[in-house]
Image (cartoon, rainbow, N blue to C red):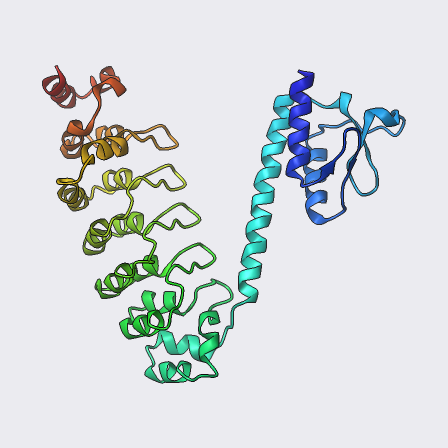
Length: 337
């Protein structure tokens, strides 16, 4: 228990980005350190004492507050605190990153509104030599969206081509980590998406802060032609969102039969396609639900359950779970036994 406690304590000190020696820890008094200290205090992990011997203490904060190692709570509780600290630090790091990105943005409302209104006059202005060097920096402070995303979202094909031909970053993300490829899904046709995916540097698989890719959104928004383009150009289906759902989970969840047919069509002649689809089928969400389980929950509609059975490894499922639906259970028995 002592070793576990010390390990957890060391993890906590490491997370708080402090440098430590064999007996003493000297911590700076920045906001991150104060945040960590407040978390620790709130959980009553430490018993503070000014009378402990120097060789049995650690200096933890800028005012040399003494922490007695022997007074630490059990290791499991301390690990929970360490996890909270880690999450807080990740939030702080992300906020700092957003702040830095926003500082580089030029929020010129004349330029931004011109892009929203598909103004050719704005393209003429941006073509000027003295303006061109700043082309990459125009954007919205509150969202972090730049010109390419604005043009893609509003369906301005000419504006998109203008920017791509001048070398803007096709994978630039806003504060939610959305790209122009994701934003173009609001368009009424696929022209802009085709222009984007034909660029070899276009990343089809960038995930937003919620873990969604353009392919996830195409399924949710029922954008079948867009979905087909993404699959044709090799978008991944296995990436999981913040609920642990891959693209196949969402196809079943939203009952997108046409999306499933597209996947089967493009995987028909692909090497290892059956193995890949089996992997997608057996992947669990964070609620421990596979695609087959989700399909089972859609009873009495048996379409997806029947479709997924050929991509199911019988050794990986408990067939007794499906006995409550005789039609599904019978399909399993007929196929595997």
